[in-house]
Image (tube, rainbow, N blue to C red):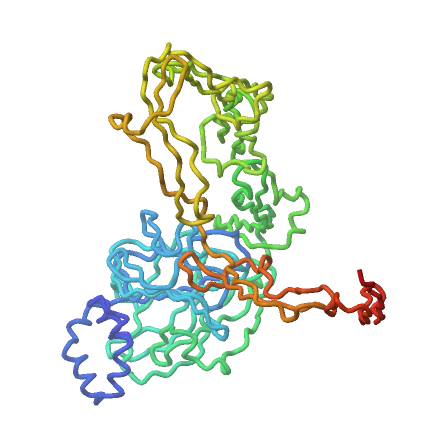
Length: 616
């Protein structure tokens, strides 16, 4: 498998080949696959060393922490969070350009292309999954790659491995210096001899700033995955007997290459056993100090807010013999000799923007009565610059418009000039003018709004005496012939000769040379629409003692069509009483003795009437 990984490093397609070769071995004759490897043995002649490392801490400051720097030219890069947590992995280039999860922006899982390769970023979301995030890349890398941990939850644990071109000088393993930012533990998974056989070797724990690397080669293609100890957690103390627990990783049995924990049987995962560590006496100098983290962002964008930071107590061990210094996180009580630093503080990024009234109230929009006035109100920063209204508190914005009352408007009558021409060419006539009721700012009002009597709009005038003047005179129009709808109306006309003040009616033929007025015209008082129509009453059912008569009632439109839209509250009666007088028998006046039976209408009883008629 290591041969395949090395060949993939040369071709830049590590992930594809690693995944396909086991399946090809199952589907095809293994000798064909091995023959393929022998044919392409020149591709794997270049040796590579595998670098592995484990990183774990109990507590860190919240934020970014550099784990390691992966050199340019590395391939088959695999980074795995061994324990599922709320922490995140992050990658940057050597120039600080973010690749994954940079600048406090958490990216979605997917493929990210940078520095000559593609990074596959996975984040399991299944509840049953026990492993955390992972990042893989086939390589080779064109630049150095910096691996970070975004710390948010205690006890982070990250495993990483990659291949680099071998610098073999006759030894099976090499030691590469790592950054001093965080110590890393590493294990030697075994070395390969010239016959590509696994040479078993014990697990090696190196100094915190170094990492053992080796080339791992195997030819067995049948995969089998087992749990294998991958290292230890950091010892609880640097001396004087501490405690640490073993870390386990899922590996391919023969190649010992780290794989996803989902490939191993979780029921067989060994329990995390604890063991003693750093049993040597503490001959070094111990000191305790506060490790103070960075302040968080202010809780308010403007105005007073709060910010927090993490404060932990560190035990610093100094060994004068080798001039080394290590530190571990201990209980806060160990630093109790000094005052506990503040973890919460007030802050203010800037002064909040405020409303500023930039103009006085304008003049009222009307000279009298009720109108409106306005003023300019803007939101300004503490530098006095105008900003959008949303930057200020809208609940306390001063009014920009308000009503104004200029008092009751004065009203008076206004009249036009009298007309220049008299209505009569001779004799007496009329001149006219117009009277209106106006306010001071020229708004028409109903004619009844002004006080005092309305000025006259007509006056008499005299155009001089008339001499034998013929004129048509018209009478008033008659009443319209129809109460609704189209009708006609007429008027009388007369030809009159005026001589001084005397007026005489003459034959109309004398005025034939004058325009003759119309004597008839159409008229419409109102549209008929729908209305009730009634017929004549029928004959009464009785001639006396009360009867009934009936008539037809119809609702008709203007076109005499039946309708149901007439007002039902004014429906004419269709039946009424009639002939309510009592019935009386006829009396023969020639009869001297008469007997008449009658109905007394007051007492409603029958009586008798006798009378004698005397002869003349």
